[in-house]
Image (tube, rainbow, N blue to C red; front, side, top):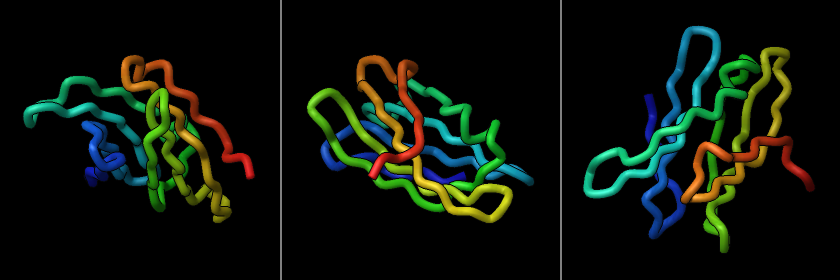
Length: 98
């Protein structure tokens, strides 16, 4: 398991859990050392992809994360994960646009 901090000045973090053949990605809001909210971006586990790197930045309405993955066929893909801090479970996960 790896915990990756979100953007500076945010209470957000990303937790990657490595399984034998795939990864799982959780987004958490932590305040005062306690997890206040925990949501899984289930598309990662379903796809069977491995997470290579996560980068994130603050936006006016929340956070945008860029998730670099390695697909089972060996291709590298980048996805965008859009998060509204007040509605983590209403995230959008889609292939990154250039």
